[in-house]
Image 1 (cartoon, rainbow, N blue to C red):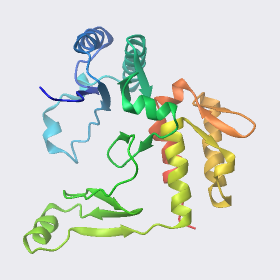
Image 2: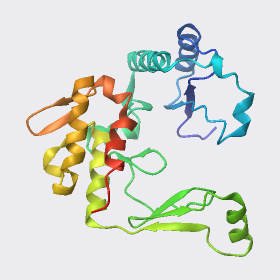
Image 3: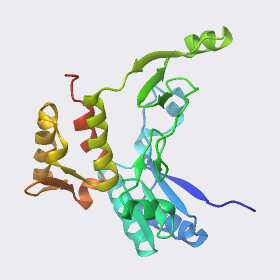
Image 4: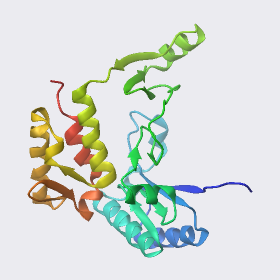
Length: 238
């Protein structure tokens, strides 16, 4: 059909999901052989998404069950020849993302993993975030305010985060964790050393391994990569 790449997004944590049914789903997906498979985790937050009140919360799998589903996903897809990128992306070994990772060119944009150099990302929707030349722009989270701004020909942007050397280093550290699953201590200035110490404490849970000059994310830590990156997100501005 002229499509160069076919990707599927699967969701873990849906009602009544279990290892038996999920294994069958994965076998069907592998048989279809998509180029890329992305995992998403269902978050039950009906106070933010009222439509979720229709979902039986008691039928949702527990956190431990979701981790088991993710572990099963990683095993079956890697056994089928997919490369595991970051925490939620699986691609065929010939995919440009797999090649970029092996060559150290892989990046994580605001949208997803990519093998292309940084480009301008223009955000349009409510709460959306865009980036131009290292400066990030966030749209309003209020639908009425967003509509009013758009209908009057104004930008819905309510916050701009200009690039600074400190923010650039912070994002480089996050990129290294997300794309290379490691963080060399030499990458961090004094302001980021407390974040490194917080990350190092996760060695007790087996999420990272401490080496002389860096910390490395373990396989268990890959399943909690967002938590590890949040240690950097929580850094106060200098």
